[in-house]
Image (tube, rainbow, N blue to C red; front, side, top):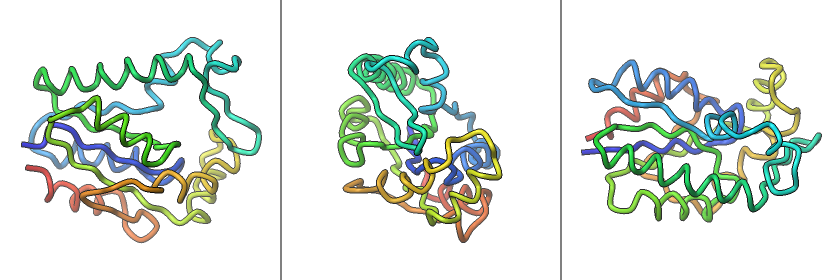
Length: 176
């Protein structure tokens, strides 16, 4: 039985909309957790120190050792919730591509995971980024392909060509 669904995609690719739709269409309750939740839980000083997470004016995201320490604890915590019986949807941005997936695989261990790539053309994501008004311009375009490098998926969806609900229904058919 699928215990964790990991959605990986760049900024403004449509992951959060898919997560909300998945929670609506899946028959059991699923927790929604993501990298934004982790960043929001960190002290504000983590966004202004070299050791934390930095959002550059061009959209580049740089993470330091203090962030990595907290992230490792976060991954283990999400995995512990799943091991305790919670079904979890993870909304992620694999800034390190395959290295990011390796960290998740290590934390999740033998838990049954559905790995989903959320693709979106960089120009489409960039348009969404501007419309949202709450993101650094350039983040969507720089992440659109980079987050998928070397990552292995069970399923991929493309939000430039399908609405969130259609993507969620496609993903739901793969959930055991």
